Length: 336
Image 1: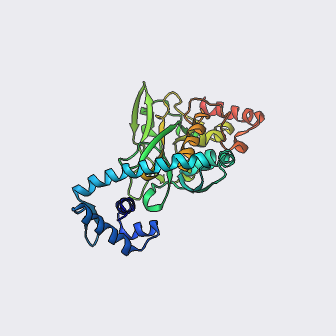
Image 2: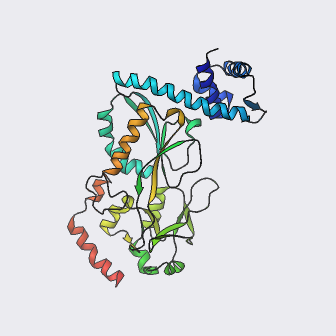
Image 3: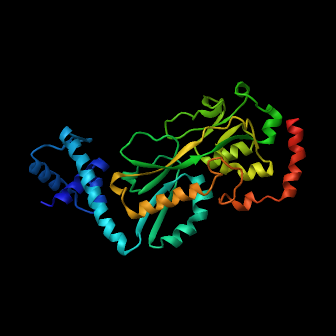
């Protein structure tokens, strides 16, 4: 029995929670997968997986063996990669998943740099706000914003994402300008929800060095970043979102920052990938490149209002000074 192959098959069955999906991902017949697992259990003298008509579950021995298999396979991959990297650059198909706004405004405008550095990597980029299943959907690496759920994935923090609270001039003229957290009780917000059954996400403010969460009332909730921004531009209520998304509209006066002394708490941004891929050269260089990209752009974490070094919709962000001047009297009248 090829014990390394048996370990690979066993861990893939566990990761996909399916003999059929494991067979598909390994390009093997399902009958071969079943035979290998039976032979492995016979060789070890213990049951690893409990099978029912609806689901698979690990036995205590299976769970312990799974953890050891992961470590052994990772060490094998590391040993092989150390020799492969010496002879050639990272290569092959790399599937990544990124939130749409970050993908369109931050990552894709800078991809020329990555492509010129790693021409042998074929990128497949998915833009989605939903939480993808990396194992089941065959994704190598995902970029996630906010607190991470407990999982078997490896996560590397690559930076922070700074936010702002904004509203359109029309909304401010109608509802007034909020100054304190108490003022928010009489204001309407556009809310954001994530996931099929998830509730709306509470708003966050840093007040006197402490994070305060606020449940905002509103009659409109969306689960798409572009739609959320559009609702704010249309004057449906206050919105709270990453600064890089609204910078062009702050410059034109189409949106106005409110409560600037109580900004939202910055959100962590992490690259997430599976244990089985954490030593893959193509994953490693992409995550390193993303971390360097984030570090080169202080605008992303809100530490600077200057966009130098960032690519954030430059066509829209390069607003002539004359346009800025034209909006100042309007804003002065609104805020008087």
